[in-house]
Image (cartoon, rainbow, N blue to C red):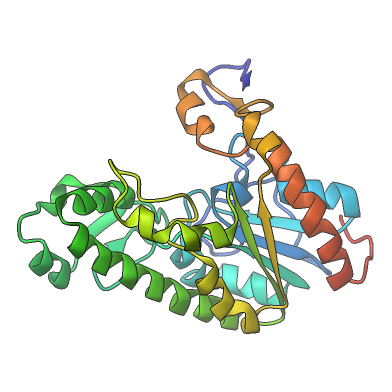
Length: 291
């Protein structure tokens, strides 16, 4: 592991904004001119604690201009509801959309913060009717709320989970149709997408607050529904060697160590770049475009 030598700040992400977007993306800020590949996604795309996340590695290896619009803890809503993001994505030569979890988006049962999608705002009337024995003011984060509901009533929790899965597919369909053009759907996780299918029944009643692995609630069948809407689906599950390295090579302050331990490290990002880079070169004609 690598601790920051300058104090409590950890890695400097040079946060920046584009247009009228209220989201702070990882910098330095790029000129959105000419041909570029745009990357939409969550914490992995943003590259928290990673000096060079996979978009930067791809640019270094291929010369393609790669613009990182990753947003920490993002759900689909963060991008779909941002006019600037959708405009920039529609103008990109290729847009890579990382598959994000289904828990961090508003749905029939609860609303999330429009930008900090992992934050729980409030329960709908339907949710309050289903869980009259729950005080929803106790919750700040979606995952904590879902874990508590699952422990209280697995049967009622499963109804919410199924709603999230269905809403995720519908919201992703809307996002991809709004982007148009050439798109890549990226699975980047510590397990294969099909493993999420086979573990599904076990995870329904797993002990404790284990809701499953990220991207939460998303499985191979859900991805298959979206295949006709994208140019490519790229799946990268981190190798055992990458996972075994833990936080090696990551940059964080001592206070950030627990958060860093829950994320994949530089070798996993290199594995994504090794697979996704050649794919983008084919789609963008192999030209050197970075500037």
